[in-house]
Amino acid sequence: MKRTTPIIIAVLLLSACGMMDAIQDRRDEIFMPMEREYAVDVKIATALPESPDRLPIYRVANISVNSFDTDDRLLKLNKNVPSEFEAIKIAKEFTMKNGGIPNNVSIHANTVYLEKLNTKTGKILERHPSIVQVTFGRNIGGMPVVGPCEKIWVSIGENGEVASFHKRWAELEPAGDTKIISAIEAIEKLKKGDTIYVVPCPIREMEITGISLGYYVDYMDCADYIAYSGSPSKAVTYEPIWMFDLKTDCGTMPMWIAAKA
Amino acid sequence: MKGTKTGVSLAVVFSLLLAASIPALAADDDATKEYSVTLVDRYAYVGNLSDYGKDYLYPVIQYHFPPDGWDETFCWNDTAAWDIDFGKLTSGYEGLDEADFHFHWGHGGPDQNTGHKEICLYNWSFGDEDPDDVRGDVSWDEVYGKWELDSEWAFILSCSLLEGDEVSYWGSALNRSHMILGFSTPAYGDDRRCLDEFLLRTLQAEQTVIESYYRATLYNYNASTNATAISDTLDQWNNDHFWGHGTVSPDESPNDGTVWFARWTCGG
Image 1 (cartoon, rainbow over the protein chains, first blue to last red):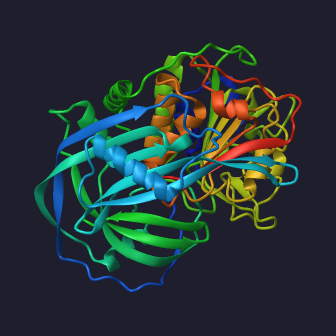
Image 2: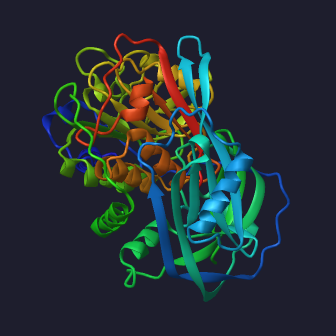
Image 3: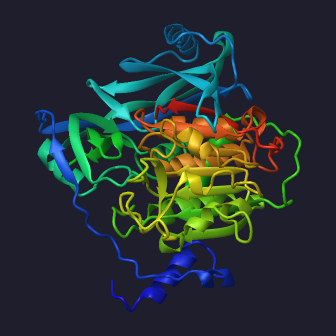
């Protein structure tokens, strides 16, 4: 972008924020470059997996939603919250009674604690288990389905009570297959930042500690399908992705790359 | 943003899914509902964020707040987002402390000297920027005990700002302000969807701020992500709703120097 365009940039900028009043005058807009390429140092610390030439894709035939929340009982200061082992049992039993548990799911449980902290000393003054969150996710052909479109979330609170149950689950049908890019090609896309989600972390270095295949479906497509059931604006498809586990100077994190060639 | 259709879709889904409660309205500090926004998509020395804030997050804010009667006190982007917008002054212009709700989008990163996580502004340079640069960074000690005017809730969508002990440092900003919502790890997930769900739950389903944030993050960020919420008092943690949508607990006065917090693994 030319240096002669700061006024245009400023106008666009202010328009983007929906404000054009006088208070903006105090800001001294400076030249702002468009997208720059920043070199990210990428190291591979894991074996590159064999990649299949093609993988199936799936189309949503139906999405069922089953949900209830007990008002104001999440993340409270509780005294008698079950263990994660017990919570998984409770969640399974509850889900079985509410539409059943689909095949090929993985289960995770995490306890959330509510803590009181002295900000002057940094000392934890109180620590109370609040809920155990149990999550069921789908696997396809041994590969996890990621993204918020489809899961079963069960929150277990005081005395093992189910404080919240939220199930979105799709009925899938085959929709052909697609050619898959190799892991090496996916790494090239990773270097360019061509990832499914933007991460608000300034990364200079990344070490790839894991590479695997999975499936992803866009939530907005999903929500569109649910709201306009029977006449969604477009087909909702589950498509393969490359999933990277990364150690970065910003922390450990995943990044996902569309695997469709 | 797919625009109105998507918004309507989500509203329909959630109005079907959620039962609304209508507790009584408490008194606002200045009797007006206000929000402010800072979006830093572009950086001089580190990677850009592809205008994601301007193109995808700000439209979500605009979709929800003005129709609910909230006024925008400011929205500063990129080079126009300065450190003073984060409430580091306690007289004159007080930035985010002049609005009830503040939303920030941009990098979070470590200061090279102190190691503390800070909010990265346009000129942030891996924690080695000029400390006097208004476009450099915002560190916890600049806002220590400073949020005492009108601020209630700040949603800081930046990676790892509330990591580990940072909760006690950033939590100390809550003088009369109520909550900081953020992350203690890199935030990997659907930021737009999270913000949309958070505002649907607070403004339309009238859930508490904490419950809304918990669900919005749980459903929309990957299991590698830990979200964190800090509240000045337990009453605020349990009872705070957005203005006009339920009870709001009183500001803490005098400030007792303690906060309540939780961090959780997301599961989207």
